[in-house]
Image (cartoon, rainbow over all chains, first blue to last red; front, side, top):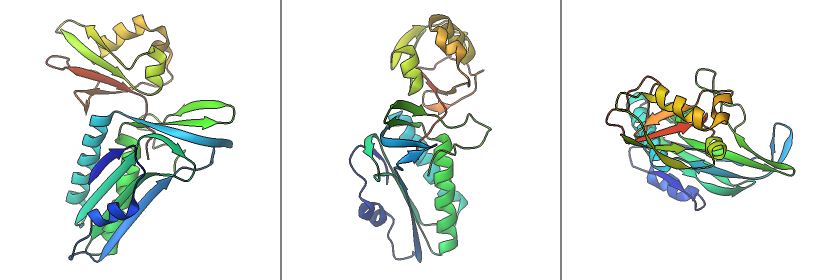
Length: 146
Length: 81
């Protein structure tokens, strides 16, 4: 399962998508909306995506992870549109015969997603709004996230 | 040739639009298209970073030729997750 959606993420469905009898482990990562960023109180935020390209990039991530790690299946779901504090913005589930690979792959996928998938976050504060921008390529990933 | 140019996030606010069709000559590359855009939108020339660029939804270099390309997107550093 690879999806960009404006509806809330149903964690159960994401887990269901990677279930299988050969699995000994499933790792689930959830990114959630935090109420403070760089010292400012966040009221809510909005994700915008280059939809078709973002889905392609997420599919490519999934494919690379399947080749690179000893895992069985991968599901990646990202929200777009307005989100409230505490909402799940991204869910990544990885199943594998053993937990080591599922943890590693899950970590690799979220770290890479934050650098490569064309999605942007706009934060709304009590006194304004601002686009959050990751660091330009080659300077490491944004530290403003989860 | 006509190219569909797309802008995202802060770049869409800078240009005031999400997309537009731009006419370029066939020998153009991404860099020459960007130069043309910075002439049209002065604020693009003052960005503190160089946008990422995708031709037909694939990340590419600034030296990428626009021959056969239908859509070019300029992307601020991404911040999903």
